[in-house]
Image (cartoon, rainbow, N blue to C red; front, side):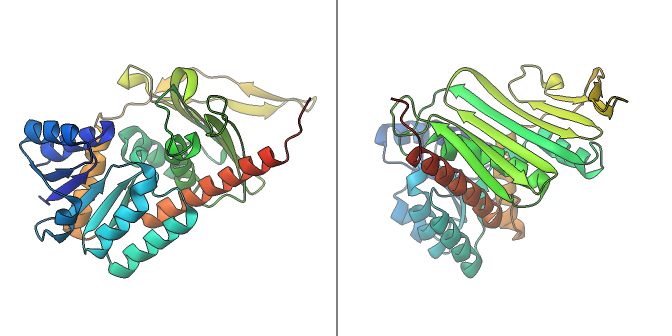
Length: 329
């Protein structure tokens, strides 16, 4: 197995450390929080290294960056320039220009750049992709994804950059093209500055649309992806407690009545069986396999750059709407 250095021992970094240890690939850990670092070092019997020492250590094959989003670009550039492969948690960066530079740097240095778009490695999402590739839903008509919860509120990035990368990434992947239009609305009612809730509307020509709704100020948790085709609808409810009920197919089809009114023929739900696997385990293993086999990751720099471009356009759309908003008073 490869030797992987982990940068960042926060809540998600701890999950990554657990998976790396299970894959016998956790080489070292680094974090500015000394107590968290010491606790994780003791738990997994792994050494603590300064970031500079990680970069100069010839035994380190790859680095996982699980730090705050604002640090991703600088840290990832240093890792790549040191000659090592890098995994960066989402979002890749919070600036479109930085995302482009990072992707170009990885290509120039011929280093693997993988972004933590976790849903690509979820077995249910992989099943959805397989079904769509076999024309299971027919022609895609509409997609939407809701990612809602109460907290965890961040200050270094708004809710778009914190939550929406997963959903935008899935939609772009399923449609397999860049949107022709991106419009968004959002509100920051907790602080007045940082967006707490946002909706992105994506257009793909005249025949396909999608929207993403994200919020960390919602009274309940919801993570649901819905894909509508002319042969039926797929619903992926990741908050469903029963694994066997997370993926449902509805063979709802519509027809046009003689009076010209479209109607649906409703069908009973069909639960689709999917073998259970931890997405994070599959994701981290994929990074290690890409290093070993020298192949491009599924969620590579190019894929992540497209996601950042959509998020940047959405952010710009919201800023423009705020700028031209009318004061009702």
